[in-house]
Amino acid sequence: MANISDFKAKLAGGGARANQFKVTMPFPGYASVGGEIEDFAFLCKATALPEMTIGEIPVKFRGRDIKIAGDRTIPNWTVTAYNDTNFRLKNAFERWQNGINNHTDNEGLTNPADYMVDVFIDQLDRNGETIKSYTLRSAYPTDVGNITLGYGEAEIETFEVSLTYQYFESNTTT
Figure (cartoon, rainbow, N blue to C red):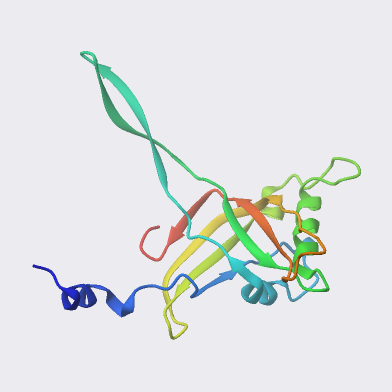
């Protein structure tokens, strides 16, 4: 029968910690004024490791559905960032989106290489060393969230950004 010692022996390194992570977000040149990459590494409050989904195709056979593997779907990836008083990250995301589709004339960049970037997510151990890494290929922001204001709010402002990407690679899958 299993006991607590068996459990502890199976939980390598004491378990991965959800608060030990780093996101590296290189903004496109037109959206960056400098320092955003370093700021984001510190001001990224929360995110998730990317999920994987393979759809299914039901095939009828003698009155029964046989499920066959379908296409892979890539859901959007979301980050939550702290906002500082110079709005450096919020402004950079706004410039990034505005380059894709300008507010005033509905024009924007036409070459995807000009507005897509690779984003890097590292799960860290308790010593700050990378134990799992992901690269989101060809990402760009689809939603730059609002910032809630209110007299009852006594926290540092945060905002969410949702990015779409083509696929991801990890240090164990390519």
